[in-house]
Length: 328
Image (cartoon, rainbow, N blue to C red; front, side, top):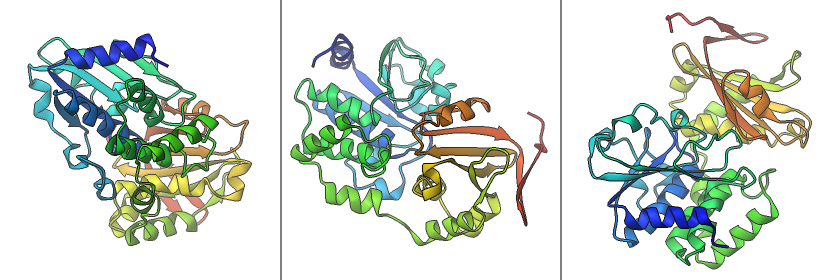
């Protein structure tokens, strides 16, 4: 199905000189896969393309075509020839990490917003937002497939995002549409075994060490009924763990039997005075975005997050959150 929004996006890319594609900070498979798929499409259309992200892609994602091109390139925001900015898989520009960068662009540009977060307000000049989609990659598939642009390289990028956001087609984001799109991407040549090896089965030693600490502290919060655990900066330092090790804990814990009846909350000290909360649930009647919104966060009904000020201290009975030591 070819919609007006598809036409607006594809025409804007066709008329562009330099396309800047933005992935959100601490990039996961969905923001990377959708960004690299769009990169391939723009390159084949003869456009200059830059992929920007505050953080580089994790090593396990470097099997994707041009994944090494994704990373911090602050100089691009002063480039006068950038006339199209596409932000993928980000509920807002702050989550993407570019809220302060975008106003710096010296020339006129069109901002395109492609996303599946239910909290997305439609901040682009062109908005392709579908909160019922399993992933942003599913949305990008329909966009590119509307002009028969999906080849094996693009298919592998898109299937990576779909597989990682649906927990290998096992979590509640796995709709009939997601399964159908996954099947079509495999038919287009997506390398499922390669994706599974790198993006699903990848569990480095340091990741497992950190997860061990999280599992050791797992407990049921008496006030909320949630299954909760906490990690400190010292934990991350001791285990020499990367951001991927931290972000993967929530999804892993979501597979617990208890998660079918409750929600899972992982609290992580990501910097001094900064605590990140990651929420997951598989219960059909629980919407974790409502909890995340209480702390200024957002996300999806079954996967959400927030950031708060404070410092974690691990105690014999769980954890304590202390007020921030610095003024904000």
